[in-house]
Amino acid sequence: MNNINDILSTFDSISLEEMDNVKLMNRVDVKYTFRDEKLPEFLEKIKDHYRVLEVSGLRSSRYESLYFDTPKFDLYHQHHSGRLNRYKVRVRKYVESNLHFLEIKFKNNKGRTLKNRIKQQQVIQTIEGKAGEFLSEHSNLAGEGLEPKLWVNYTRITLVHRTIAERVTLDVNLTFKNDTVTRDIPNLVIAEVKQDKASTSAFVRLMRDNFIREGSISKYCFAVTSLFRERFNNFKTQLHLYKKISK
Image 1 (cartoon, one colour):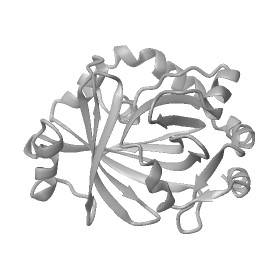
Image 2 (cartoon, one colour):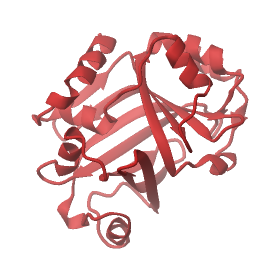
Image 3 (spheres, one colour):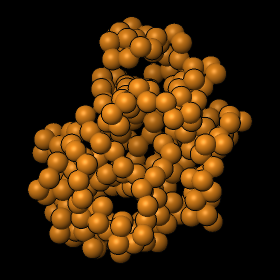
Image 4 (cartoon, helix red, strand yellow):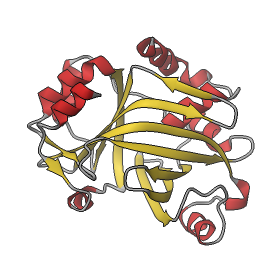
């Protein structure tokens, strides 16, 4: 990451408070994947178009997310089958700032992602009390029907476009783990473009110019296929690409 940090130091920065104007809790998401050796070159090419989020003097941050699902992985299988109007439920820890949130993501039948979250004092293992009420308010799920399944941890770089409502997140150093297994995913960058409405930006143009196609499974689904024996036929093409990149 040393080379990456040197390049990020040449970006103008944006604070968490300033980024409140670009929360994009109702948005369109597009994902891309590529090898981490391309990241320095890509950052150099777009640095005039974006500012980088800086927290406590750091321009990359560690995220640790505990995902919940039903005992039979119903939320995972809804994604695998391509169902829209589906949910993800997680507790996320922002390591450097020591903040914790229960987050509920909803992908609707118009392809938009809606996110709601509520602050927590710590990572919770059960969704009950106020957390359970929040879950019921923002989903058709019940806390007692969900259990913690796995952790998805990574380092994130967040870029904010200078002129349009867009954020780009770049996730590296992925690790998946459950109670018995830990898997590191080397060499892979998962990039996500988050916009108020789909449009071509500097980052999207960069991906097209380098023949990097849209498409990705979620990090949660990728983790499930890595740690558990759940069916994954509909993800085979993307998983093959991930394995090729990670070699």
